[in-house]
Length: 319
Image (cartoon, rainbow, N blue to C red; front, side, top):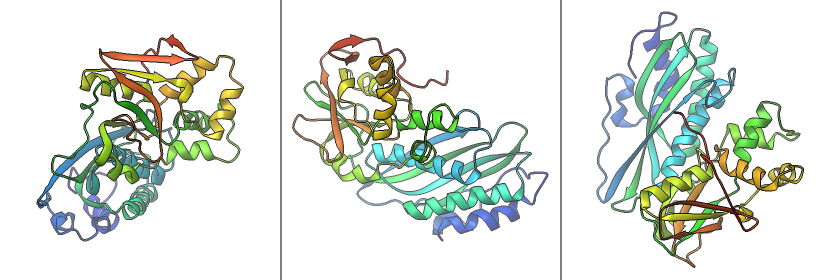
């Protein structure tokens, strides 16, 4: 890593202490002592690259534990690679430390990141560290390998395909509400789902074999389905009555006065980091639930209790 020297600390000494161990000894990282890294080619594979940033007060609450922030940053990027059916292997990090961050906070961030890098088999190859008077933010670029020509794109859905989603939907949004104290969460399950999503890397082989299009559910299921529809030039129909829900989400839904409105809220909240995909009818993917179909036309069609409803934006928008 390299960058302007922070006035409060020995930046390069701190990089050596905190981040050099996270390279995993990858030769192309050069011990983080250079301004760049080398990623050697892998015959028969395409290099897949993705980049996401998170900002305090936007993607995570102010005062969130730095280690958790680092882990979520890595995981949301790995979720993008999971949706592309790619195998992650390396990353680059940029982080802006606010003035209130002490050495212990920076060390906690590095420790959290290091723990997840080990868990997911990813090496840190480089990046940048800077100081900022504004909110804490960090950005990560993740790299993965996929067999040549087998990356699953958003474009690829065709009429007659089924629409599926992995896992359960709505826990991310309810988890944020739980962190804010707006939803009961006695066992901490919902907050955990929001703070530490699990990238669906386990679906990699199944997606390569069966998916015609895919995206991760980050902005909101409805919004991300719309992205697939637009990229593929088709119309996607979602049946909210088929939405897979956790027990916690079902308990929340049971006390809502307007079921259709509540289901749409769960399908629009985002932060689930599941995979929504299309596949040929009858294909089926283990761990995925059929929630709709691909039709001729364009745009999005959302139904609940057999009735068409207006989905609105269907998810988070930054602009």
